[in-house]
Image (cartoon, rainbow, N blue to C red; front, side, top):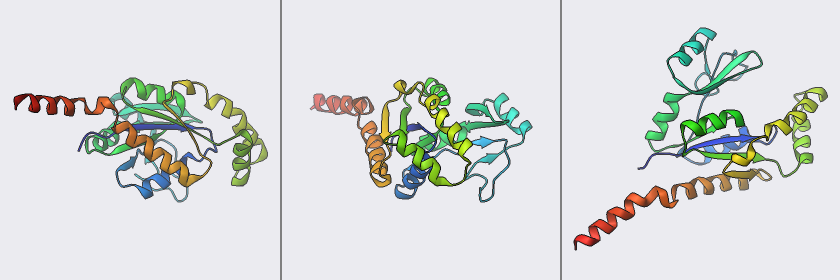
Length: 205
C-alpha cells in the first residue's frame, strides 16, 4: 500500500464542510479526519480525541516549542493547531487524511506538504448560503450577518486551490470528493516508479 494523500478542505461557513466530512468518514474506510488540538474548553457532547485534543495554554505552548504542530493559529482568544503525529502516522499507514482548515492555514500546510491537495467547498449560490445559516437556528440575526460578511474574506486566496467542490446535494458531493481523491492517486507522477520497473524488467528479457 502506498502513502496516503493529505487533503486540505476549506470553505464558506455554512457550506456544510463538517457534514460532508462526517459522511465521508462513515462511507469510506480508507479516510481519516485530522483532529485539531485546542485550548478552548469542551462543549457539551464533544469527545476528547474525536472532536478535539483539549490542551491547556501551557501544553499548547510546549507543542509549539517541540515542533509538534503542522500549523496553528489564534482565534477568539483560543489556540487551534494540527498535531503532526496524527497526520503523519495515518499517511504512512496509507490512509488519506482530511484536514478541515481555513485558507491561511491551508497555505502553511502546502508549504510543508507540497503534495497536499487543496479543496474548497462552496454552496451553489449566496442565497443558499444565507438560507443554510438561517436554518441552523442556533445564531442571532447579527451573528448570521457577520458570518455572511466574513464569507467574502473566507474565499480570499481560493485561486490557489486545486478543486472547487459545489455542495448542492450531500451524497453527490461525497461521491465527487471520493472520485477526486482516487484520481489524485492515479496521476502519472504517482506511478512513474512502477512504469520504470516494468520497462526495466521487459528490457531484461
